[in-house]
Length: 515
Image (tube, rainbow, N blue to C red; front, side):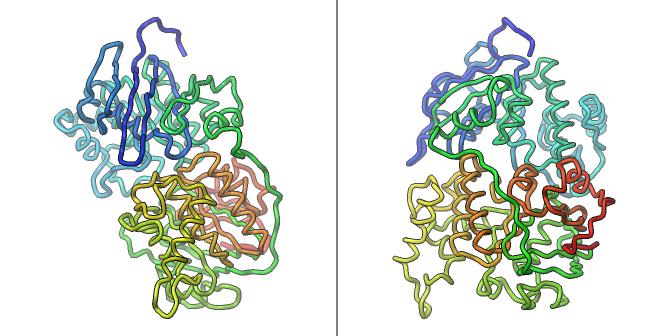
């Protein structure tokens, strides 16, 4: 980072924001210099999201001061923030599938968009300049997830950008796409743009960021220069010395098939979905199989066919042990011993307006919480309390609504609810998506314990590091096709990245899958 004697690009002084039952930000101070890539770290519920929304004008702080280039400023709303030169890329994209790249960016810019042909030319020029070339005439549904993220970033870059806020920007990217993104971010910083980088991937923070500020329970708990730290020391700043943040697990290969998929071909009912093509896969008792892939390559369809949301026309394509289940609905699959963690937390994993007790009951009803059609509320409340306690879910209690929890804490609750039912088969999509490093370690240990008890576990994730850590065998899905599955020690991150991009050329004959 270039040395600069000018005032900080952004200064926060004493930012405080109180919600009912939650002090989200407590007297937060933060400085971001021009041309600085600054990491904002913290465990789930630490206050990172609220602070970003304050900067971007989505939330008004109860007290405190925001300074822009040394001058006090009241950021009225996101449109005002954009005029100041603040751009933000959210973790969840906000793009219209049937509109073009240009039309989406024009909608975001509002009155500043100008004429569409001129905007398209600017998009083409800017995207090529920063190594993120994208066709402005493409419709969003034709783009990969990595390309969609480019659209979100280019939307910020076509403005006079001075501060770019990125929330978990690498969670949906292949290793090759991460490298490209980092080249772009370093180029932006070299040109004077400040970057606020929010991530739970501490190895990326160490490789990219000049400075880091750590939040704990809404307050600044520390600052560091990531290049001078290791990931363990940064993690300890986030979660304290008492929380385990790192471990390794021995690899195991099961021998008794519990989940088998044979020649599964599935036509997606979604016009923007992906058709599954000749999927073959076996997951044995006592092992974890990891499936990597960029979102939108058939994961959703594969998960729906396994959970029972999509029934398969040929009843012999999916078996649990030797029982055919392809035409069984979700409740009958759960009675067999299936537990399922869906990709979407709110709406599918949990009902937003229901309490945690009620959400625990939704899938835990088979564990003695219902008798002769009557709900045993005391048992349901005890089950919810046990999940909250064992998985350290930060919530106002079992009566708290699901949508009152942070994303990471809701994820911990859903994971805990499924694992604590002691399933024979667990299918989990992105089990640690959006959770901090301490919580991720706890979830990984719970998965390993369940594996060692004899369960067959299938994990679908975009987090390659996670898959290599916990998977006994590993592969990738691309455009509805499944790669060969091979023992994890025999694979590499580079090879998996190629398979995520559809390069299945390296064949493996281990009896576990076929194309």
